[in-house]
Length: 98
Image (cartoon, rainbow, N blue to C red; front, side, top):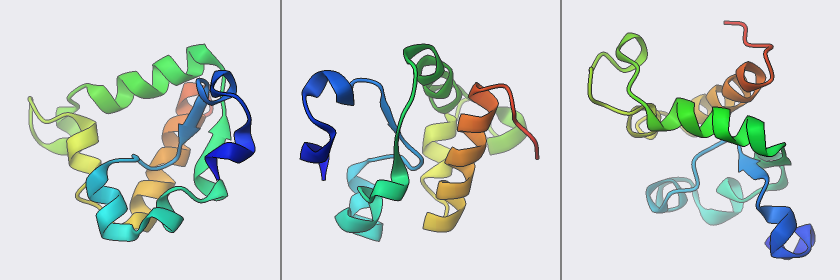
């Protein structure tokens, strides 16, 4: 699937709705995690906003002042992670609604 995106340059600004971690690949399978529904092209600025959400703690979301959103969301179901990723992308584009 990744070869369908062309050169590595074009992959640089891709984002997945779901975290592409070894744990998620083991839990849900590579076909599900790397599926076309999970990959989109985004601008670099939006990628930085999305990355910031996942890399920082959010006590209101995780219940912990030190747990990063990335760690928290990995405990959720495939469907939850997928929808959460869509919501984060919408937020990064200024359209976040809960």
